[in-house]
Length: 543
Image (cartoon, rainbow, N blue to C red; front, side, top):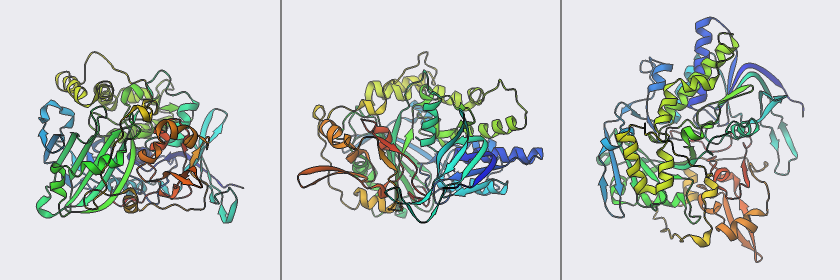
C-alpha cells in the first residue's frame, strides 16, 4: 500500500499527562522565542482522555511549573483534599493507621480529580498554542533510518481478521520527525521495543507492575464527604501479596474507588478483579456504598519499579517519558505529577536541541537526574522491594522505618531482580481461592463491568493480542499454572473452553480494555500486546 508521509519537527505519541506536558512546554518555548517548529501529538483513543484511568489524587507541583495560572484558566481541579484516612482491614473490622508514620500518604494541598478531564483541558491548552492533535490514530510501528528512530507509522485501517484488505481500506500514514517522543503510558508497545533494541535497561532491575482497578459510584448525599481520601491495606488479599485500595470522595457526590494488586504475586489462583469486588463488601467500605449506583468501570496496569528499574530515557532519535519509562512514585501511589515533569523536561530538551541552545554533552537523562522528579524516586526507591521481600505486614513496618524515620534516605538500596511473571508458582504448589458469587449490588461480574467501560473494537480485524506460540496456553500454562490468563485479565478476554473433549484457548479481543496485564504477567511471556485498529478500546468519560 502506498502511504502518505507527513513531516514534523517533533511527534509525541500518547495524549496522557506526560505527552500533553511535552507538547505544551515545546509550544510555549516556540511562542516565547518566535520560532515555528512543528509538533503533533497522536492519541490512540477516540478522544483525548478516552483511555485515561487513574485514581486520582493530584499533586500540582508540575502543573504549577507548566501553567502557573491554571486556576484562572479553569483547570478541572475543584475538590481539595480535606481529610486523609489510612485503614488496615481485617475481615470484619478495621484499624486506623496514624497518618504521621507514612508521610508520603499526606495529601494536604492535593486535589481529588478526574485525570481524563484534566487531560482534556490540557489538550485545549496545547491546541491553543498550535499543537496539532490527532485522536483515533494509534502509532503502530516505529520508523528507522539505520539505528535512528525517525518517526512512527499510524495503523492501517480496513484489514480483516485474516490479513486481507477490506473495501475502503486506508493505509497508515508515515509521520517523520526529528524527535519521536514516546508517552504511551504503562507498557507501551513502542516503548518496550526501543528499550529492548537499544538496551536501555542495562544493569537495571527488571520493571515491575501492578494491576489497578477503578469504579466511579454516585453516592447518597448523606454518605458523601467531599474531599475525603481513604486508603486501605490488609484484607482481603493474603499477607504475601501487599495489595491496597483507595476511596476518594470527589465532586457531584461521586466517589472514585479502586484496588491495586502488585503483579509479582505468587498464587496463580488469585483473581485481582475478584479481590477488588470482595474488598467492596467490607463493612468499612460498604457503609459508603449503601444506596449508591456504580456508573463506570475500568482497569489498567501501573508501572511501579521506580528508580532501580528506570531505563535510560533517551535513545537515538527520541525520548521515553512518563509511565512508558516508569516515573511513578510508588510510595505516594502517584504518577501524574512525575509524568508531567518528565514531559516538561522533554519538551524543553527537544526544543533546545532543535534550536541549538544546548551542549551535545547534556542529555535528557542528565536533566532528569537534576530534577525534583529524580529526588522523589530516590526517596521511594526501597518501597516496592521491601514489600516484595517481606510481605504486607513486615514490609509495612520496614517502610515506616524507611519513610518516617529515615525520610527515604536509608543508607541501603534494595533490589527486586525477579520479573513479575517469574514470581508465579505452579498451581499445585499454591492454595485454591474460592471467591463468592457477585451480589449485583456491591460486587459484580467481569462482563457487566466491561459494559460500563464503553469498550468497543472493530471485530473483523487482526487480533491485537498476539500469541508467539498458540500451543502454549493449553500445553504449558494450563497444566502448570491452571492458565492464569483466565483470572489476571480484568475484562474476561481469555477463556479455556472444552469442545468435543478438547480444551481450547479463546481470546475475546473485543473485550480488551488495554490494561496490558497479559503482556506483563503471562508466565511463558507468550502474549504480545500491539495497538488495535483505529480508536478501539475503552471510552472512559471521566476516569
